[in-house]
Image (cartoon, rainbow, N blue to C red):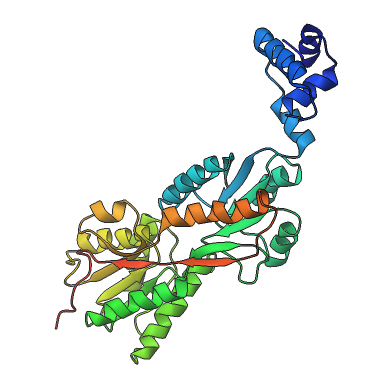
Length: 336
C-alpha cells in the first residue's frame, strides 16, 4: 500500500510538505504543490481521510438522529436535508434511535469524538437538561420534535395551531362527536396537537372528553387496535362521527378496521390524519390530512445548522413553517 512517505520520496519533499498540500495549506509554493500532486497521481495515493479529519477537526459530516425508519413522514425530510447538505459540502450520517436514550447516547459519542461536526435531532429521548448540556458544546438543530426552551435552533410547524385547525374543519362539517387518536407523551407534537384540538372543542362548547382521547403509536396496527379499544370502551353507546388522528398511519389503520366492519368512511365516519404522506393519496378512500411542508422543514434545518457550522454564528431561532389542510374523501358532512 502506498504511504505518505512514498509520496514524499517521489516528490523529493518532506512528509510534512505532502501533508500541507493534502490539507490545502496556502503557504506551499505552487511549484512544490504541483510536484506533490503529480506524485500523488502517479502513485495513486489515497489520503487517510479519517486521520486528516481528526487533525483538522472537520469531517464534513452531519449526524441525523431519527426515532424510526418505518414512519414515511421522515423520508421527504431526509431527502431534502441531503440535498441542502450537499450544497454546503456536507454529507449526512443517519442513525435510528428507536426512542432509546442509551442508543442515542452511543450515537452521540461520534459527536464527542469529532467523527461528525454537528447533529440534527428529528426527535430526542434525552432529558431536557442533558440535551441542553450537549448543545453548549456542539452545533445542534432540532427538527420537527423539540424541547421548548432548548438552547438550539428549531424548525417545525405550529402543532397546536394545526390541531386547532383540524378540529375546526371537522366541526365546520357539523361534527360534534369527535375522538382524538394519538395521545402519546413520547412526542411533544402529539401533546401540542391535542392542546389545539381541545381549544377548538372548548370554543364551540363541546366537552373534550365526550368521545375520548386515546393513546396510539404511529402505526397502522395501532390505528386498528385503538379503534377496537374505543368501541369496547364505549360499550354500545353512540360512536363518534369523526376521528382526528395525529398521523396518517394511525388514520389509515382506523379506516381499514372501520371499513372491515361495514362502516362507510367519509359518510358514516369521517377520519382525518396528519402529515400528508404518500400513502394518504392512494388509500381507499383518499385521506383528508394536515400537510406539513416536509421538504422545506429539511432544507431549513440544514440552513440553520450551516450558520453555526460555516458562518460560526446563528441565533437559537425558532422557525414555524405553515401547514395546510388537504381535503379528500375520508371526511364529509355529518349525517343528520
